[in-house]
Image (cartoon, rainbow over the protein chains, first blue to last red):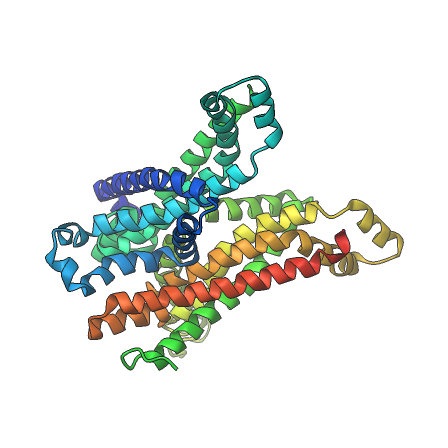
Length: 224
Length: 246
């Protein structure tokens, strides 16, 4: 074991940490933007609205993230019309494909959380709010949103952790995230143990900081 | 059958391999999960600490990193160890019998197959998740049931296999099902360490046919098929095991 390699190449890992962080954060943000309407409209009575959302969620929750990434990163090149369009400028970039795959994936999972939270909303609270004469906007702001947010937090913190872990496959499509950095260091020194262990420690730090922050947030709800 | 640019047979083999890896890792993870859950609930501090460390560390590190660590790092570690042991054995024996010739008592080079590395890693990872599921399930079994079993004169093992196990499985089933669905999708990662599963075959095939989208879409559809079958089996099992509870 020679961990001085990691100390010499720490710049690689720091860059990787930064790449992983922004890639995951941006994916989660875009995923949330997809998930909110998708999760709400998932229980829409009209099949023309419900159907496509069901199909989207079923596909992205039922297939591995790796396959989704490959489908976008390698698969898109099969279509000549797309290769000739302006979209190709983005689709030939690995980071764009990873961002797209991760966002669509986490969007589907988060939509399921949103759907679950909405469908289990306690009816009595809404009825009580109505009886107090609150307007629809007031009910949304005072009852529905805080209540659902509190119940969605544990599931969503899990989803964030899954996304951090899932993002490790970005290193497979030439992106130098934490995994990518470890692969480069391993290829340079042939020190798989040190290289991947350092990556594991970094991911563990990320994971536990997220868990810690969400614990604090959840606690702040309990005091009220 | 269906045609896939001449790749249909090898692709089906890959699909079968994916299923094999998934099922074997499931068996391993259930066994590890049970052991870890029992260790967590035991009275021994050492067992508790080991189990807690195991579940915490595994759940903090991505599966891909663990897989690369076990496949590449483990290989290096095992070979280093077997080399050192060989040297030590030979030196000791030469010390006693100076005429002794150098022989490799342990194999000089052990090649970990990606097949076993994949199964061991996935089983090891999901054992940690299973442990949490089983721990909750064990805690939700009525204490009176175990006391009754003791009163009937059952020993530790009978108590576990006749009373605890059948009842905890009912509580563990939803969590177990979820873990299985996640595990199934994780098996796609074994293609990265070089196992010829369907993701790897799709990659090779799309290289020669220039039809990457078609091949990866078929892979995705096979995964959807596996998921759909699993979901209906799980629904059936949950219905079956909840019969006596109402």
